[in-house]
Image (tube, rainbow, N blue to C red; front, side, top):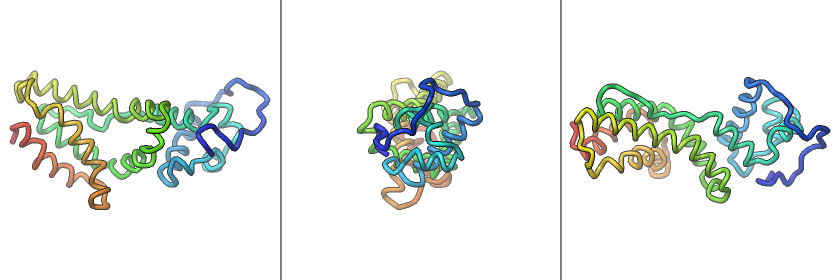
Length: 203
């Protein structure tokens, strides 16, 4: 299936979206994201999702006309921030965020890797990826840093502050490439303590 649904939808009598329950819709979203992780974006098909979700292909086409639309909707429905923590200190927040990210690393990094190339080719998919995964994380970091500045833990103009999101999000993507392993909690906490905190002047 291509991003324009080249295989073609099955004939549909009604053009309007049929009503489905939120629970059923989430099952469709879970099925499409699971297939992306297992097979990659290019291999994603409506037939595969329909089989996994135990529904007809036409049911999916009534809701989402193209593959990018379907995937974008699934990403937005699963929007969340792994780094949204508040322990009372920046060091504690970064360690807690590292543990949370490490626990979900295989799950989330696999999805990002599967969608990365396709997102660069499709503006709609790229925006959905940013809305669902990137922006919530950046917002969580901004809030974390704002609290630390307000508490006086680090000066507002510290040059290392703007690089914290790139450090934390970058290492999640880099370790699988460099070492063939996902960044687990132990690795990420170690990274925070050895690289991020010293750069901020925090021990």
